[in-house]
Image 1 (cartoon, rainbow, N blue to C red):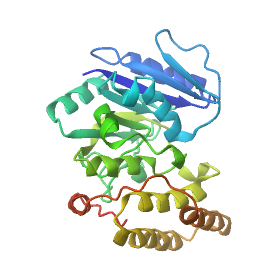
Image 2 (cartoon, rainbow, N blue to C red; image 1 turned 90 degrees about the horizontal axis):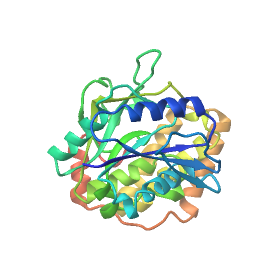
Image 3 (cartoon, helix red, strand yellow; image 1 turned 180 degrees about the vertical axis):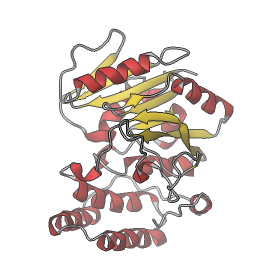
Image 4 (tube, one colour; image 1 turned 120 degrees about the vertical axis):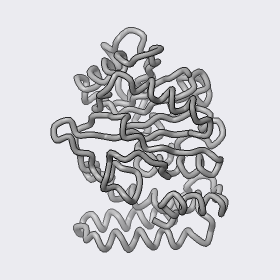
Length: 290
């Protein structure tokens, strides 16, 4: 079971990136092959053996990760599993890669594993980092319907069958888009509490484009993947939830701008999931209307 890792960076966290690479190098078992993707930056001073991809501009999170996947051959075929790790994260344990190998080897239908993200100072796992609606117990592993992009492992056969991440999303919801396509293709997704990435506690709204892209990509996600009957339901539920959260006037203006953009701009190919997949998602506790 050959394992590779894809790390994208803007070049702004060199010390954290070095610490992450050291934690990957310490993994037990066969060495993990590493690709670091520079988003419009030069990559210097990386350890020997680390592959690099220097993109001429920032292609966004899914675009950057796709470039890293392709560095392992078309759809990543030169490795069996790809780890996605945020450049300011750190693998807490030395057996995480081995746990991934075991998980994928024992279950041939397992396509994606989502790690537990832990703040290194407080030991807290933020609720938004547990990819299920019942998120009160982050120490409970379970089958889930999506995953955390910066702390995850994906079997490369998923990319061959379901496609790569949607580069046009740039930021936000690209993991759910891939997850829904993977589930529709028959793969399973696990949240594993014993696979840990240490990562500083952050707020997603720290990104200037957050509110616009969250709204736009919600609409794109529905337009691309849901049966026509569920598209207005899904979008309507998220519109209501957004209003109930009472964002600031500035945030709400950006959100509605993205919402409009989601309906009026191309979102990529439409491949609605089967109703059987809708039922699978519902049985897993997250029907695709929320």
